[in-house]
Length: 288
Image (cartoon, rainbow, N blue to C red; front, side, top):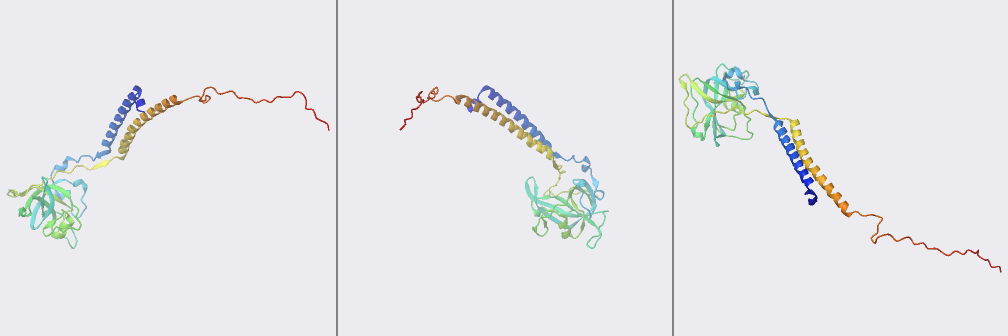
């Protein structure tokens, strides 16, 4: 079989099959790259700072269209309403987010028995490596700017402890703080009072959370084409192997063939006929 495969014509055939398979593999990669499509890029308006009260309404679901929007809001913090969210990374180091309740001026108020006169929103003010480094929020009226993010999902069966939280989950924070809240939170980038920017504690690191990359969608038709081209590449090599195998079998049949009319000892012996002598005279019957 190897001797047949090493014939010049089959070596040339193998080179052609490999080149054809390579083309099919490249087509497969191209289809695979097209199978994963990104959503259209987010409009640049998300980096344009807009008033929070115009972007999001309390008591409603958080729309995906406002996620990552830069917003501003005027109001004040409540120092008694602050938690540390554990397990947050900063430069690959685990630490804590400082999350404080911020009362938003001119925000719509919710109705109901548990509603509060003012509407609040959780604000992630910064990151610290040690809980002892967390400072109280600035007092008085101020204007904050930050990125609007949806509420995180609460971590089940986890009690982070007093003054702690396992996630920035609005549903949990509402129960801790007993306030009416927006359905999201703000990752603050700046805080400005009437006298100027709020000085930042050196131990508190700014979050500066960038906009999240767009979601990916799978085009199943292109994914199918990608698999199909791989099958074609394997089929090209299979055809070459079958053609070599057929040539090899034909060679074996040519070497081992013989005439079925010939015996092992040469020509067949003529048939021998046994003849009995015939009596030309009729048989005489003896009369008693």
